[in-house]
Length: 332
Image (cartoon, rainbow, N blue to C red; front, side, top):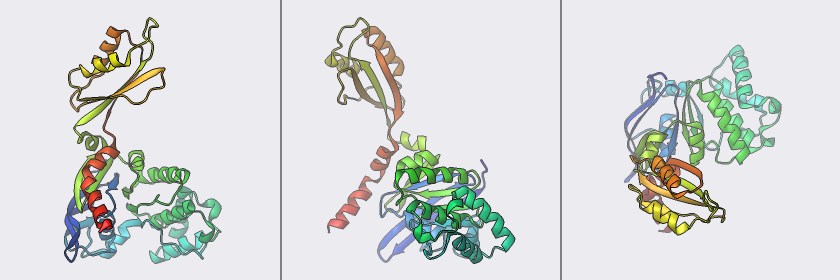
């Protein structure tokens, strides 16, 4: 991956009177990265994106997009990126082709360049079958594809996408993420979403913001590791190697006695097998000990999996105060 910085913020701030929506946010995104930009409602995600796309002026700090300053070179910034807000800015009485032509005219593409770019984005976004249709006739999924196409029509090196799948059904979301991964092979993408499974499917890195500040920034594996614990799942058959019934109490007692185990949970069983979830510190790997224990006890080991805490759980831990504050404001 190139080390070239495509998005860079330093102490970026946006205040509305006494309320600070973005509080000295600093982060970098390099060429070729698809980065998830996460946070609960009111955390400052959309405000940050609107600053980066020059829709809002910051109160303080600095931000550069493709080397261009959002204060002094707003036109250069806009020429460098494609922006898809949560609700794509579509003219419903236009056909798809008319709208793409309109978007190209705004960006001053000549006819030959438009023809070449339109052919490419129609293929990438899967719009060939609806080019002649009015946008008002399209499903939400196709409308988002059109919105993505207008963001790509001028071949920008950077894409900024704000909740692009929020109104899509599961099949449409899957298709959209596939398009995104194809597009992300050639450019830098900053993706804001509430759906953490989308981040895990499309991104290698995430930035999490809470109450206007960055609370985590790094590879997904590193962010998961911030929890300080991992979960090891073990499933044991209800009958041992000799065909005798296995006591659940005996299994749990043996697991509790293992060194490094801080908690053992037993989800409901189906009577044919027993599953246990063991919590340990990050630097403890129980798998070898569990295998030896199963052999010693004569258990039939059906499953043994070690996994870091789910991204959703880490996200909740990092932003819980933000969500509580939002609930208090709503109740006031």
